[in-house]
Length: 466
Image (cartoon, rainbow, N blue to C red; front, side):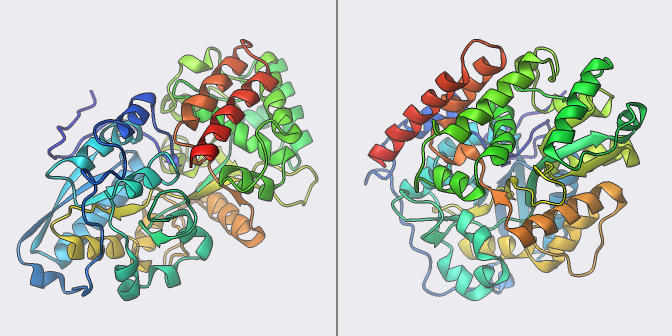
């Protein structure tokens, strides 16, 4: 039975996922919490957020320190990764004790705002990118800008600009993708296509090389009594990610980027409506797990590992657990392009960034911790524990065919500039404003045009007041 921690600390065990990255969605209660108490950025609430003029990198000089860290690294490979890095950091700096509080992604989002606004907040947190979380926290003065620490540790030099931009926000919280650096990520992320090798073989199929071949495989699987796509959508975000993968087949990657970051376009544009129509078509054809909106996201990979589904769209954060349960029977590929040999595009980026809270009593130690767990050596640990490192590991090679597939896909996307952003970055309320209509679209209760109009209404309202 999962155990939950109190807000004061302690390790929590339970199922959970990212982005969400990250995943990466705020539930309705979290969105409501963002507006609770004082308005973001009000003088009554905003603490000082100026980084120290002088940075102390000698952790030993800090004396005895308890560093409280909140994370959402609760799945198998993610948990192993952070536990190993924490142990290594404490071995290197015996004067520091890490008080780790781990929560599922959703639980972390639901409780983080309250923790950051309290009198005794954690020192380091995983703060999700986008307008719904990081931008709101920055606007409220709850996170420390990392520019002074970056001058010492060189994170912007270590990471490609596209990745540091994802963790950058202007101080007023109005623009993501520029401004000061507020976090550093350890892992890369891809939303791609997992497939059951045994089921494909029994169906007489090969991994599809084109989008057309993929849709033919879905039809074949359905006709043979198989579940074509393992899919659980209780939390709404899975449908947004699946829609985003389909969207990348119809809209250019730059159009998707411009739309998410508020630089142009409309959710009711033709290609975006076409993507919604395709999602609805798949649902009508019975390509998804029955009653998908009632199935939890975390249960999707577990069901897939048990044999439910020929394919599964999902993030690379599931790879380690799937490899442990399925061995070489599971494969991973980028969503196939329109034409064989063409370039693929799909959503992804990097894992939730590690950020320093504005009220941390130990910001220098917190910065040293973040540097340690995102160092080149940490990228080796990521590979060892079955995760996808954000940067190339200096010495370690991935274990198993699945991780080799994923690393190859990451390298391909990096080379072809094929990554598009997570859609929930678009507005603070997009998870519900778009995720809810997508649930209705899947059950046939709304049309593609109606769903996209609701998305556009939320988007336009946010852009107007931003």
